[in-house]
Image (cartoon, rainbow, N blue to C red; front, side, top):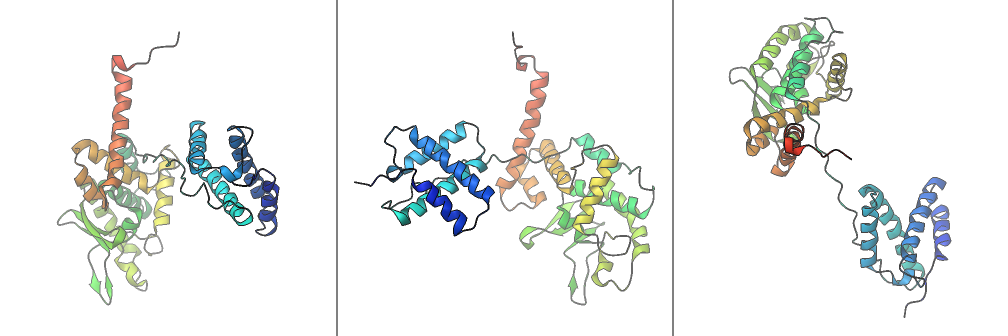
Length: 324
């Protein structure tokens, strides 16, 4: 028969965390709160509760109770971690020979849907000039070419930054990505070093064609492989993903759009609008360069969300009954 192991062990465990592990007072306070919550749940089982007799099933039930109260998966995972550590310590100090928290996991975090712009907003973003940047300047031409291409082909920002103005292989250098005007395609090297070719729309090709003459004026012979880059900074160096992110953010802000517009928003918008127009999930998977169809299926939920919003706002029988 198991010995009775009650709350008297809790202060000793917290002292061990503070002394041996030298955790901060704030962290110790969090452990104490999470372990006190466990004690409270155990007390709900009856007056004779005992750490030594806690079962795996009871811990799973406690986790479910926390979830039903509205605690987030991350909060439940933190509590389970605190409980697991406590029982592991008890096993070293007492007759407890198994950890009832082992194998108990928090509920999965709900997968957040990617943010996407409405089609009109996406077009307005990539086609409009920045009122704070001189029209026809190298910055304005470069920005429009970058933004149009992001939305036209659904590229990752790293893929955009790696583009050359044409395919090059010489002096030990080979292009990872390039634009081909003859085929109206862009070839990129994506995740896992996998190459793919994606069509480029006419507005993007026109924007890039307008940028190329200005690009020539920024070239510097002493910058090595940067001379092949499609997108250059004012100093003639290859544009980094971070600079591209900042330029798009500032551009969106200048147009009065949300401050968190970033390159992946345009990639999400591309995917969502392609799926809405075609319904071909496999084709969108190929265009995005996803290794698994599961990564693309999130856009079906995004598309359904949009359709559900339209239904709720338009169908007479979908309207909520007003409160009396």
